[in-house]
Length: 68
Length: 552
Image (cartoon, rainbow over all chains, first blue to last red; front, side):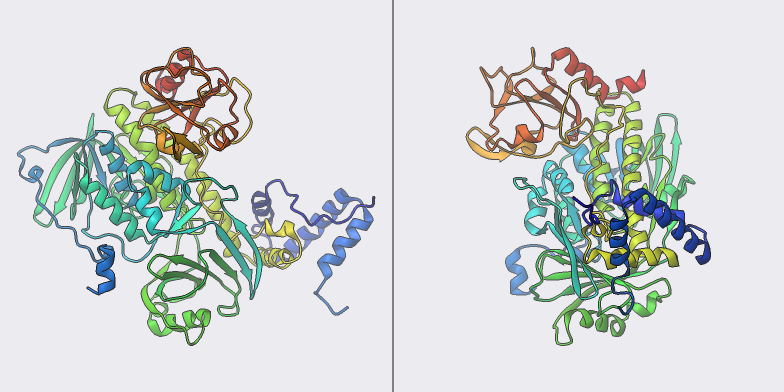
């Protein structure tokens, strides 16, 4: 079975994660926040590993943002 | 008075004046001494006073005013609060008058994003929440208080001075006929968010003030929205901000509009500004009456210590939260619930003063939990930076298609009682148990039968300790506790009350087997449990829950 992007709830503690995410950006300039986000995505992508899943996530994230 | 309101036989609590009456204490040559003086006859002070009076402790309850709350204010009263009100003798009144709801809906712009059920499990006596105006709750509490012997409720009595000396507190009180002095063994400061007593003692409640303003409107109208909590992010009728709608009794609807920090409070409460906002939500042809309008800002903060010698802080005086999550009045009533039995036990000499330190420790931890939840919700609803708003909007965007993102949408995590896991009053488990009834948890309700009639477990819990045994009783039954025996396997010992687990839910909710026993504190929290309790173990757990281990 090939892996697919999991859209079901999978976070242990959603509120605590969200708080930590926002906290990670505290006192950063928009430019620094951009860099943080880019690094974070790369770290998480490595954790996911599976290219098919990552492609699905990329498509899902891009959906509706720009003309196809 | 209109015919309709005369039929209800209910006073208009918002306009009720309670008469100031001169107390004998005002003519005493020396300040008279009382075991407990409570400052503040709001929900918290009234609940504490009733609880103490029910336990036979005389109470003087002082209020600086002679009216109940104006406007709906704290409208969402949680299941646990209703269960405490049951113990105080007014649960049925509040539950019957209140609008029951379990379902919350969250909308983004004009579409439903998701919904949540706060009481997914059937067979509980009380619903997850009722909505009811604070003046009703205060009115019912005040009526109950006035009917209790030993509870001396003094309206228009303002505390203007406080001094702790040795084994007591000296209070100066101002009345319409001048001031007088009182001595108290113990003082409960339930005098609200601006707590004059806190200020007099040079103490502070510290935390974060949020830079946002909210308009609240109570609107009277006949409308057919269901009894649910509706929360909108960025609705078409109030773009860029959030709106919350709740149904209350008497066809009154509560609407909270987020306005942003730059809103001018004086301007925004003017009808010509308020009415268009409401019409935008309800429709241009909607017929309604505006009952009450107010603007609020809020802070998430607490005092570092809730006990200062012989002064115990409770409710908003001790801690303040944002309104998202209904954690203000609900946690305040739980403060009273936690404090009253402890203070009664100390005054009767059954417990050391150290037991009152456990009030502070347990409720400080509860306040931290409430502050954490209400701060997180507020940060989501009121993003405080560009990046925070970006993530918030991304979560909302994704939530439409991706279920995981719905778990991140935070329109307020609604009040549930704190599990006092780390309390020094608990006896740690020695036996294996599953489920949520861990030491420190408030006892969950379940349907039962007693003497053949249907009822609820919590109705059978006593004013003191309760031992809840399943199938077989322990080797000997402690006479200082009320012992309930569920589905007795043999003869019922004298003094033990047999109950029937009519739907099998009681054993399931308590992960019980034949022989299992739970010890419940007077505030219904679990403090110990065993697979096979013995009298010596039960007595030791009771002593621990009374603070004797803390004192030694």
